Length: 213
Image (cartoon, rainbow, N blue to C red; front, side):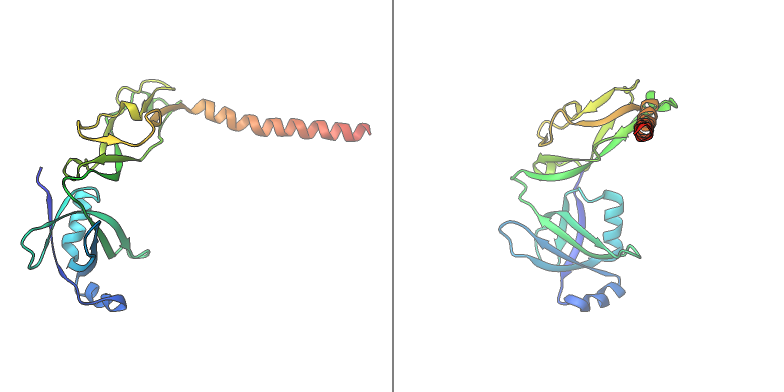
């Protein structure tokens, strides 16, 4: 699969004045990385929104900057949005060296259907939504898929050590960490009921002791 492409140009508007850019359908962006000079840029808002919606924030991007001969290899580092409207305010990109391994927090997607999940007494619980991955930039997966179709009964679980990663992809996460598991709902309810009952019994004992005194 080819890299995603995004066009950008140098930015000369900064601070509060960037509001005028957004009104024109332009999003301020910034690029930085080890050993490079940080650079203020701007790009078309609709193109950037389309890229984020379709590809997410974990794909390697060829950032084509106006008047530069070669695109820069970047990942999205941070997305800032308006808390009310959700409008893109600013996006930071991190430039990478394709020959050096990098770390990234990659989302975990569940696939398939668990037989245990169909039961009214069982609950599917996703413990990990993301996982730290190490790989070369071009080998970095956009997400990790976990097939849950073999989870058949309460207590069944998938651990980090069970994940299928590429040959050149590794994780720094604890291999014994649970990713997803099946929990018995009945057990959860009984535990929730047991605590108040115990508290009521203790309160009754205290009342009887006071009356005896």
